[in-house]
Length: 121
Image (spheres, rainbow, N blue to C red):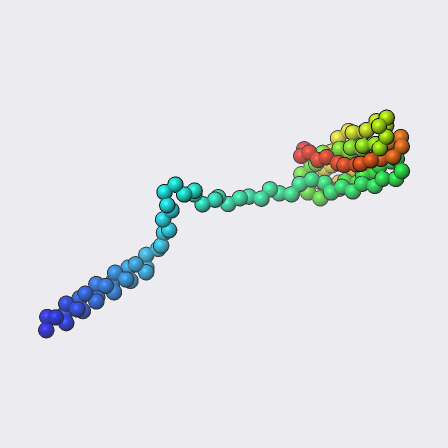
């Protein structure tokens, strides 16, 4: 009769060990030299004005609207087509939240390109 007791004791020990393994939280081991898990990356809040430009002959008009809570400093740049025509870089203008500004400049003759630069204020 001793033999069945040994089996039941061995089965009980195995069942308890299995229960302990499944109940314990699992922790994945990181191999030595492996990089740590990347930290949560915060995405920056969107900033900057939304600008649209219009060219009429030799005149340039740009409207910039700032829908964000931070200010934005915009500057209009005009490149003229003719080599003797002076390119223009307008003065920087502060665009506060929920504000729209109008920027203008011109060339003597044709306009080659127009762009607007932004800087956080």
